[in-house]
Image (cartoon, rainbow, N blue to C red; front, side, top):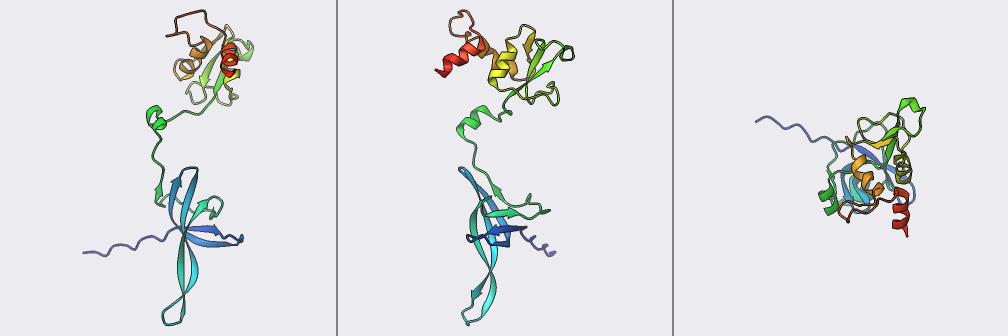
Length: 187
């Protein structure tokens, strides 16, 4: 049977000690905990042997990142064993969430600010470099008669119910304008 290659040495990492000193150690593992990341690092130290000698040893400790560890420039940490928290129930139900916000694609070369298409920021049809709109700005833009909501991305599904005052499923009624709905919800 062929000899197995030796295990690769864990990558170096800078460990910040409580007094501010920095020591280069070895990153053995990363673990996500609620609200933080913990890094298991080994730092060099000295230990006494039973015969009274002093020898080098590794002291292993868990520290919170990034307060107590720093990456070594040019070092890859891709192969470090990493444990993430399991997804929350909400994440399991909703799946991956898209980045927040919307963008306005001006039509007619931007000559007519009332004509356009509102896209989700990650829509394939969204124009490059367009400023990101928050909800109120996206609703204001959507209220222009020449503006429509993109149906290829989530913009129509997200903004249309707000513009129509959630009328579907609530008895029809006359739609209110989007800002009036937001003002009502904010009370």
